[in-house]
Figure 1 (cartoon, rainbow, N blue to C red):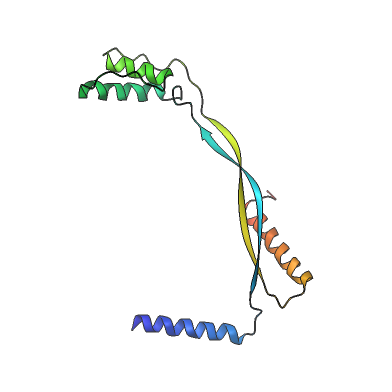
Figure 2: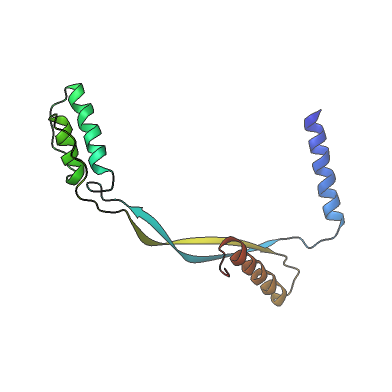
Length: 143
């Protein structure tokens, strides 16, 4: 019953929209552009918590009785691992390489719909207006 009511409501909605004689959006235009984004790059051996991370893993490895293997990461992480594995007191991080932001370029695309009944001038005006709204709303270009 509930499904039938939904289908009936959808059919009524479609009939109501088509009877309004609105222009049908029969075509689309795709606009793609480059966007500058950033990713966080972390030095695996010397990031701000490397010593503590290595120390924790060294403790776990020693508790499990695993055979010692030097850490390939190196840096503060390896020093922390060694200290914990061999039962030395934690001395803390000495050398820190801060995380850094690395820029990269990505491509984003947007679809803009228009009615083929319109003249090319009307289509271009509509697509340009939609594009300007996107710029203002989604990317805060005018802030």
